[in-house]
Amino acid sequence: MAPPAAAAQRAGLLARHAPWAALALGALQSLAFAPFALWPLGPGCLALLWLLWRGAPPRRAAAIGFGFGAGLFLAGTYWLYTSIHVFGKAPLALAILLMLGLVAIMGAYAALLGWAVARAAPARGPWRELALLPGAWVLMEWFRGWFLSGFPWLAVGYSLLDTPLAGYAPLVGIYGVSLAAALTAGALAQALDAGRAARALSLALVALIWAGGFGLARLDWTRPSGAPLTVAIVQGAIPQDLKWLEDNRQHTLEVYRGLTQQALGARLVVWPESALPMLYHEAVPVLAEVYRDARARGSDLVLGLVRYDFQHQQYRNGLVALGDEEEWYYKRRLVPFGEFFPVPPFIRAWMRLRSLAYVDFMAGAADQGPLDAAGQKLGATICYEDAYAVEQLAVLGQASLLVNVSNDAWFGDSTAPHQHLQIARMRALEAGRWLIRATNNGVSALIGPHGEVAARSRQFQPEVLTGSVVPRAGLTPYARLRNWPVLAACALLLALGALRRRTPAAPT
Image (cartoon, rainbow, N blue to C red):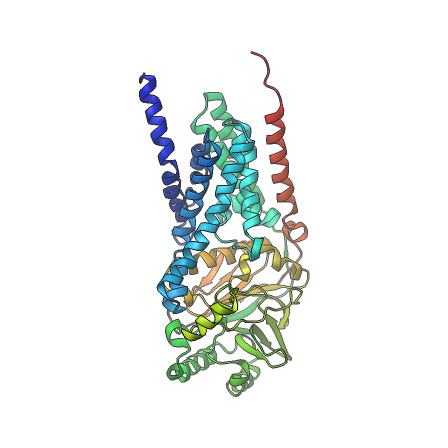
């Protein structure tokens, strides 16, 4: 046995380096998400974080939490630099400031959680890691997903999409899957540092959680409501740095016109977000020709285009359905510093001097209904709106299909398009609907009601992705109850943990 002084010295060394270990651990957890999909790192890294938090005083627990959150988002969302600086043309210093600002905010959530648990919970014990920490972690994920516009990226549940735990998604949504992952992490933390009996009970809990997900995955919560429908996604693959150049406009029009001619005959033809480098009213002559050909071939069109609202003198990011009538859906969740700029006037003046974009888009109404196209009701989202799980649920009472259009060209050859596809798969699974995902340069996909990818495009290649989808009706339990069951479960776990802490220990 080591002398007490040596043991204390080692403990002090570990304590000083714990925040850096947490930073590396958070970065490692980013590999659990697409495209790497090393899913055991999802609950595994959380289990190790729980162990790092054991016995840590509040300030150190906050530093450990900050390190983990910062590491996760620094490694998991590095692609923000590409969108802001490489394609957005923002100065290097501003791009780094905005990226690190987001990383710091995401780290602050985990820091606050670590501090609060260290203040309120016992230093160790099963109730801490099987109740308090899982419940608190999922409440944190939910809170950061909507507070101050929110950023619901990299919730740990997404990393478990291709595991039995995904079976919980139609029942309790993405945060329910995160809760199953956090409970698994707590049980693993107990198994790593417990006696034989406690280890057996912890592993039995893991088996029970995963068996439950496996059983739920075998259920169909919705039902087919019509014959299969042929769909074609037009992916122009115009590089983002060339798209809006005047000299390249005619080439872009020819690409989309030619690919659409190949797609016609499919009952529904979908273009990605802001497909053409022009406003809707400028594109009317081109669209009139495409529409005439589409009607002759029995195709309806759903096209992502930017529209200028002359009444309000504002730009709108829209999705127009051209079937028997013209219908519009307007993007509700605008991208900060991409589609609107929450900055004071003097910053706008500086941006104008630097020839940087500073015009705000106008957000669409919160209660927009589905689009009518190809005889179906389409629940629409644009870009990263599909990361806000609960906001697409209201339309499911009418919508038989989901459609998401996006411009992931902003992120180049990075992990972002793959992470975004993973998010879209979760939305299809939660809703029990087919989802048609059209992007400018990939990954476009047809996603089935169990979150499976039925067809996908190549990246950075002009392509027409074709396939068939099946309209579906009915509501999953998640569509009916939203996040309330998970929030209630988390509150119950916190209450149980708090009650256990207040219960006096039995005399020995």
